[in-house]
Length: 316
Image (cartoon, rainbow, N blue to C red; front, side, top):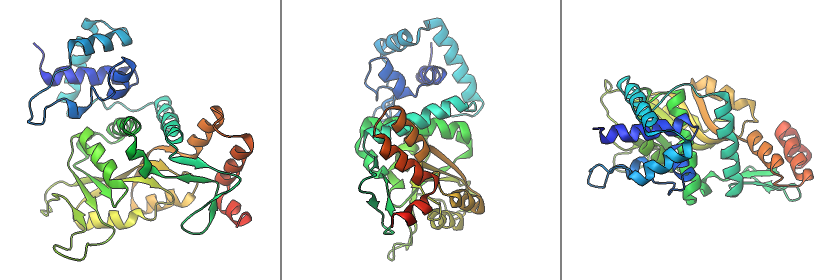
């Protein structure tokens, strides 16, 4: 007799073995993409929910494995959990990272969260011009898209960091808050959020949530944000977390510009390793391969990515 946890761990391991997220496996099998989400595995009152025999049959059929082989995967998952992992945490291959980066880029293009315009460049907050624009906030309005991206993010963080190396997820005000919540659900970890400055009344809190004040309590924390340009804005959040006794060595963003040398310099100076799903270079590759835009637009964007400062000066 297998337990509720063993069955679900087996499904997670099956998905990972074939290069899917749990929601990706469900979709591949013709099921609702949310069928295997962690939030669906227990009822609101905490009672276990079991996958249906129909669901199991469909995922075995689409992956071509037998029930006996599935039982083997369940044993593999149990061994991994006994070793302290939240899920399989083998190092992610370069090929898998490229797959995630390109699919994430495609999702950004399809949801129009990234835009290209060579004829009428966008005017940024700084007043400078740019032929590209990114709005990760828009993604939260696309359920399937954000579900897939957050499944990728959880997979990446478990591979790169491991569940035992994280005690808290901290969302940066404001765009990082929903992504921290989505990932907290998947990783089974508590979250807090960090203000840009203390709120100015009441407790004068800068960190919101149940964050222990006891310095002896472990507080290995990862900062979660939507995107990063040069990384300079991360410092206020990281400093606030460290002042509160947190150990902060990692940050995650959905999108990294990947075109400003200062980004790595700032992360190195703060002692932070950045984890990201995709960059402008990945978006350009997908846009070119799939012919999302005309060649003139693609060449203009490429020229900007190669030398953003020079391009902006020439197009001021």
